[in-house]
Length: 289
Image (cartoon, rainbow, N blue to C red; front, side):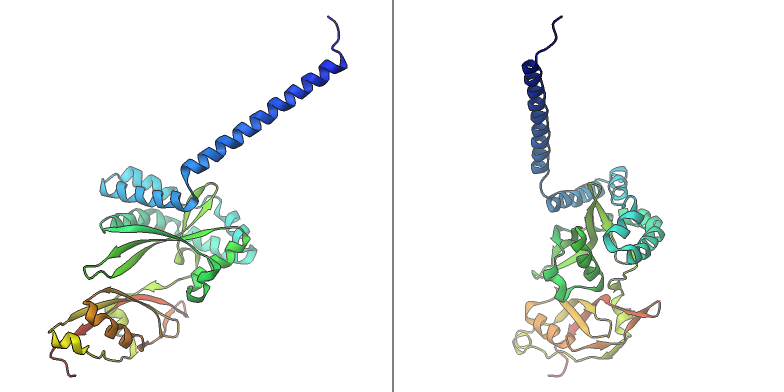
């Protein structure tokens, strides 16, 4: 057999290089098609939330457990340190580890409860533009996003009988190792607004302004209760207000009054925290003008 000439060797090398390049381009194209078919990260997260609703409503506990188990962050110690820095990441990882057993048992129940409500899932990316109204927990997540992580706030938005909208949080999510994982503020030691029942919070009131009964509502004989979703700031002032239900003619008067209310600061482990609660403002036609 005759040895190959230099020209033949060069041609063969060129063919191999072209073939390798074609393979690379094919793989990249296939990956691009897969990403396009799967949609954006936010769209994929929305589909995942819808899947929890379907599984819960169909009573498919195996599927629901599979989904919620997949929301746990793998290699969380390394991920927290990389995302939030050595000191803060270590603290968060420790808190996260302690909450794992609780999350495993509680998450399916969370989505079972949400599946009983008629509403639409909403996925919103946390951005620096959200900072003015952000909670302490959101501040930390937005700050960490500068290290490359993208966080989404997920909630189930419902509409009341009077057309008022409210939302129930399903936590914060981010992509870790190619899948969406869930973060809970308390579960990572940030203690976002803690949930307090309306009756319990009412006992902490320091200053309450009664609502002015709207004259138009009084003339029309309209009475009833306006329920508000409220975030109480660390100092006891009202930070955020949102109408959950109530007659449209009574809503603004309720908002104007409660906006001026003040509460005793709520402490958790000796530190003041924000409070997530509800307030019922009652309008009675027998009340003085």
